[in-house]
Amino acid sequence: SGLIGFLQLFNIDFAWHLRELIPNGLDDPFIVMQISDRLKPAGLSLYSVQLSYQLLFAASLSSFIYKFKKIKLFKTLIYVLLVMAFASQAISSFLGIIIVIIYTEDRLKISYPKLFITCFGIIIILIYINSLEIRNFVILDRLSNPDSSTLSRLSFLLVGILIMINYPFGVIDIELSNVKFQTIQQINDALPLLMDIKTTSFHNSFINLGVSIGFICMFLYVFIYFKLYLYFSKKFDFNFKFFFFAYLIQTLTHNSGPYTSDFYFWIIIGIFAGFS
Image (cartoon, rainbow, N blue to C red; front, side, top):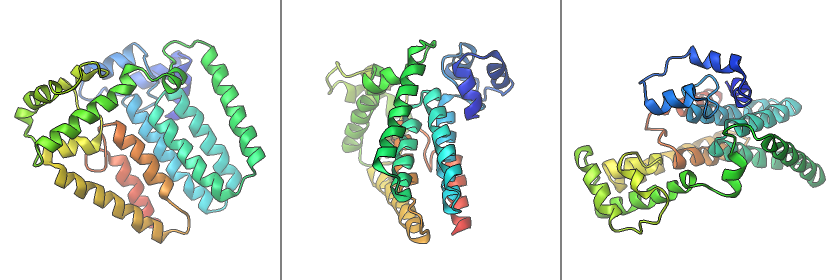
C-alpha cells in the first residue's frame, strides 16, 4: 500500500487505477473527491488517513525484525517506511515513524556521526523531492509553515476542552451542534478554521470520547491505554514505548482510536499479546 502511495505521488496512472478498483465505502464525497482528483496518495487504503495508520503500524511491527536480530533488514525497512510516509504527506505518521527510529537507533547504539550523516542525507533527498514541484505535494511547507488545516487541530482541541469543562457528563448527539455554536461564541474568531467545527468532528479520538460521554470516561480511556503500555513494557525486553508514543500522535490528530473504529490498533495489540 505504501509503495503504491509512493507511485501515486508522481501521478502514475497505473497506481491510481489500482486504487480505483477498491470501493469507496460509504460514498463520502470527501473520499471520492480525494481519489478522483488525485489530491493525496491513498495507496491501497480507503483514503490518505488510513494509509498513514497502515504505515505507522508497519513501522511498529518491524520492531519484531529487530527483536530477532535482523538489524540491517530492520534499518532498511524503517527508512523505506519513512520515505513512504513522507510521500503520503501524512504528518502524523511521518513524525510517528521518526519516533520509532529515535528509540530504536538509541538501542542500536549507532554512532552520532553516522546518525548525523544519515539524517542529513534524508533531508537533502526530501528537499530535492519537494523541489520537483509535484502537484499537491506540500508536506515540507506544512511542517515548516503549518497551514490553517494543520493549525485547526488546536482550534478544535480548545473547543472540545471547553465543552468537557461545561458538560462533564458529556453531550448527546442531538444537542452537540448547538453546544458547539455556544462554545464558539466564547472564543476569539481569529483561530484557524474555528467555524468548521460546527460541521465536523474534533479530529482527536480522546476529545471525541470526552465530549460524547464525559471527561470521567475519557480519563478511563487514557488509563486503559496507559495500562496496556505498562503491560507490554514489562513483558518484552525490547522497549515498546515508541509504539504507544507514536500512536498517540495519530489518536490526538485523527478520529480513529482504540475504541473508535481503529481495528489496526487491536491487530497490533493481538500480535504483541501473542508474542508475550
